[in-house]
Image (cartoon, rainbow, N blue to C red; front, top):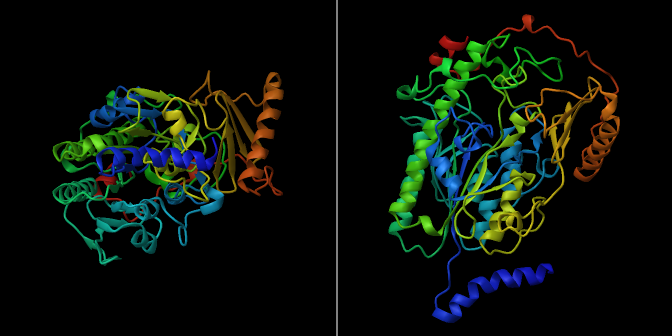
Length: 485
């Protein structure tokens, strides 16, 4: 089917009801919920039996779960900035980086196609692009992170964001309340236009300080360590003291990692509760049946896996994210193993809503996967961290390359999903190594990545974490300082 035929088919979906009833059928609404730093296995539906996320799990049962959803990576330590830029633009890392100036964003596109747009929560890609993307906005946080009790919030008034003011309340509550207020007001209006409601939480990003009444929600000694826990990463590969890595001392002791996970899970469970409140508002206001719900996160996190804490690496725990799509036209209780990127969501949403495919995007339309017409949209994935790490994965295999250390890792993900057993030195896998390196180089050419796979000057892989000194950043509250520093 040609592109023109496909667009005509989508258009007929909305024209035929008009011919029959004289009333134009409205496209579905979109509710997009984005978590911050939530790894793919930190949710109940993933099989994690220790975290409680009943509301996210319920939406997962109502829709399609993508079990292999990834962020492409980042050229800076704050992975969330390029991740959100890719999500909003539908473009890959090397075509957007973290800037959106002059780029058509997903909410801009939906507004141009008849949608009313609302945004609340974290926006890490510039004030002007938020103002150009949304018609309405409340409790908007411009930035990367802050104390959850000291969020500088802005309102969108006459197309401009106000100066920031710190509102009383916890970050997750501020953003959820703003979304609920918007949805309630929308339901009381004429509803002539469908809505695009974007809610970007700052949880469970650190500070890993739960709301006061959620402290102790999880007993740390009852939480198992990650299966790939290590006290240290086995070799240096970048800045081993980037700010995320300061959130626990070296070595990463089992007790500290369990405490960190307990706080992390409490943040997610509170987010889940407020997510449930937003979903209940849709139901109470008669909006649920005509709303597509997307739940995702901007990147994962280590929290003790491979001796790391942050997302500045290319292991599965840091690049893989939760992704659920639920609503009209989406099969229930479905799980897809397709290899997908977060920036595939933009073209997928336009397809599900019957809109013309956006121009100039790199993301793939996942609708054929959702409807069962296709199993995959790509056979492999490429991920990037700065100039210091490159990785490629297929359905079963993963290769990670560290150019500055001349180190390569090879993992059989089918047998070793936790990336524990590096097979790169085993001569039995020489052909597989060559095959994966060839695939990695092909991805570099296609993506426009000019970084060498072996640096001109090699750096030592050995390092001494005993020499590291823990230094807190300004956003860490007393709870964190007393507990972890």
